[in-house]
Image (cartoon, rainbow, N blue to C red; front, top):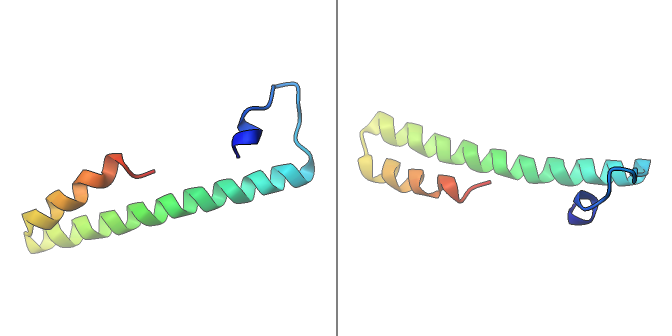
Amino acid sequence: MQKVSGLNESEELTMVERNLLFVAYKNVIGACRASWRNISSIDQKGESRGNAVHVAASSSPRSASC
């Protein structure tokens, strides 16, 4: 993905390169979304149980996530 992001505007990707970029992007974004779902789930469970310790702990890694 880094190689493709450094291309000039005049350079175009081949069909194979575009498909590979799409799959790589989809995998990265899918992993990020799964992480956010897990964090969100922990937050919701902690808030519903009134457990401030777990909510505070799950809120801290948000800036480090995708």
